[in-house]
Image (cartoon, rainbow, N blue to C red; front, side, top):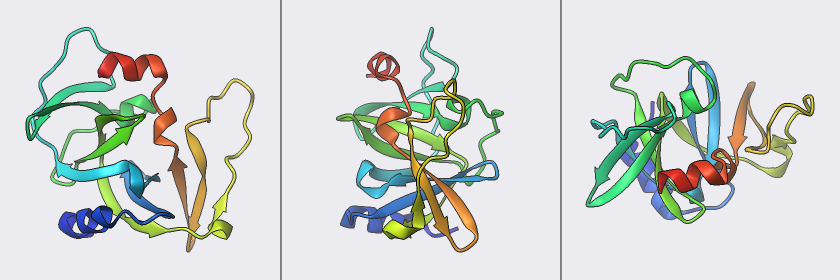
Length: 160
């Protein structure tokens, strides 16, 4: 795993065509680097009552209250105990700041146009609008997320 400081330094350069990659279980995902403000360790959350299970709570990030969602739970995956690799990606989503809890951050990956395939076409009952494509690096497939569409408008309004 790359040093978080090095990844945060790359994020601060804000280069297009790059994705911060992270793991949820055995799957690798990517989010546009332009959406990532920073990556932080996993602090203690303040729980909020009457929110969906994927909302872990809020954190105080240098005086700003930031809601945190567990992407595993949002994607209907099994919840995992936090460990020393668990981090929060602090993201800008539709003009709002939210934290996204992930198992571990992997790297910053550059993708050329020919390395990104369209989202697979599944049955009409499966919502895939939050996937912008499938990135290929070596023999690995990386699900590239459109982070602005992971949460519905109603879910986002509930958080902020």
